[in-house]
Figure 1 (cartoon, rainbow, N blue to C red):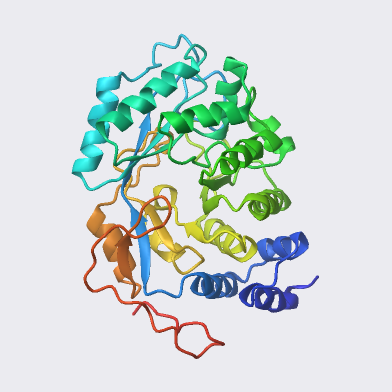
Figure 2 (cartoon, rainbow, N blue to C red; figure 1 turned 90 degrees about the horizontal axis):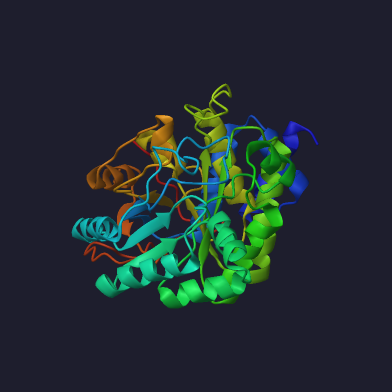
Amino acid sequence: MSQPDIPEILEKAVFAERLSVHDGLQLLESHQLAALGRGADDVTRRFHPENYRTYNIDRNINYSNICTAGCKFCAFYRPPHSPEGYLLGLDEILAKVQETIDLGGDQILLQGGLHPTLALEWYEDLLRSIKSHFPQVNIHGFSSPEIYHFAKKAKLSLRDVLARLQEAGLGSLPGGGAEILVDRVRRQITRGKVLTDDWLDVHRQWHGLGGRSTATMMFGHLESLADRIEHFDRVRSLQDETGGFTAFIGWTFQPNHTAMADRPKATCVDYLRTLAVARLFLDNIPNIQASWVTQGLKIGQLALCFGANDMGSLMIEENVVAQTGTTHHVTLDQIRDAISELGFIPRQRNVLYQLIDTEDEFHPLNSGSSNNGLPDRRVLS
């Protein structure tokens, strides 16, 4: 397929015709960045004709950095018995949750490594303690590799482990640990960690229990463009099956201080292109998040013109990406201003993308008429 066919592929996506894997690969190989952004923005406006864009306020609490997996892309983990390993105590975790609430947050992201000695009961007790002190807080907790590790260690099924965690207070499942959902790539960048089918099955079982989760992708390391599309296709297929993903979040690999530090860092152009294709290809996932954490505020803002409808979290605390030396910090006012500068009303939402603020000026957008029923584009002046 030649480059002149790109407009035809974009037209298919804009008018809700499902793209093939071949279509997706052609888009990722395209250098027509502006066209990809415009097409992705059209799709976003079909999903979200409202006059607002969203953000949330949460905190990443990494309860431990001790991990038996040893991922080449991770600067955060420490092997068992490392003098730099840690395990947070309950009082410290509860203090972090309290601070999150005091700053207007309604959720914590709870993740750690594959700890070699903690039993499933430790995690259940932690969840119950958090919920007993803060029943209003959603615990967005434990990546697929962690859940799979819990199940192996406890000699229980994934479903049994997830049901027990859910009963103890787990509210939703993050998409962490996906990296690239292609086993050839996974085997090159990690060891002792869940492979593709099992990553997907953790989410399948969670969705079967009525739970909701997010899907993620970390790209820009050893994978090919075809691998990225295969990743999208696996996520889209599971969403067809379960409908349990609320959002997709993609970010670029940060190489500094990792075992792959010699890899070149992905560009913002590569990030925006891949984000746009995610929006065009993932036709059954309603929300796409920007990644200001890896890209900085300005590219995070531009992502709202390339398929994202959500700026992600204020992220009161972030430890994993920070260990690579990538430390973008933003204030709540900066996130809100970035949304407002594009002509949208900034609205705070929860994990289910339900609005939880009390914005008096919120009014539904009159979705009007030009551009084949899509709302008029706002342009940054």
